[in-house]
Length: 108
Image (cartoon, rainbow, N blue to C red; front, top):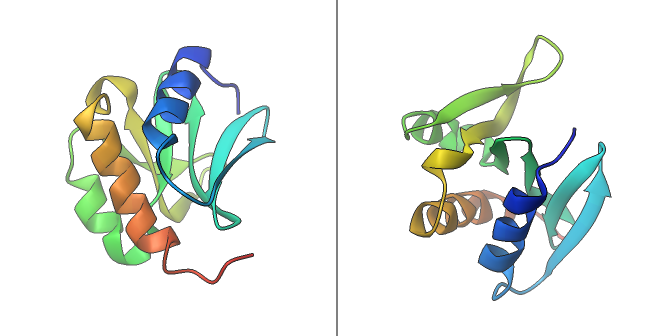
């Protein structure tokens, strides 16, 4: 997935104080891992968050959120969020939601 350098930098800043985060080049863009599990990523104009199936409905009620669909079939537990709806505290809130799910997964 092509990435947006400005959004990638925003994500780096938002994640800078969190522990066990690793940045990884994937799909032509960047993703961030928590304990080895995918947490979030960036694409042009939007972010990707892994919120899990249990939090997906709650996540999709938030402004700018859409199901993640790359192949014509939605990827359950992942959402796209338009960049204009995820800046500052909103971005940190999205990260926190994803970390609730991903942080409970066994480390890889």
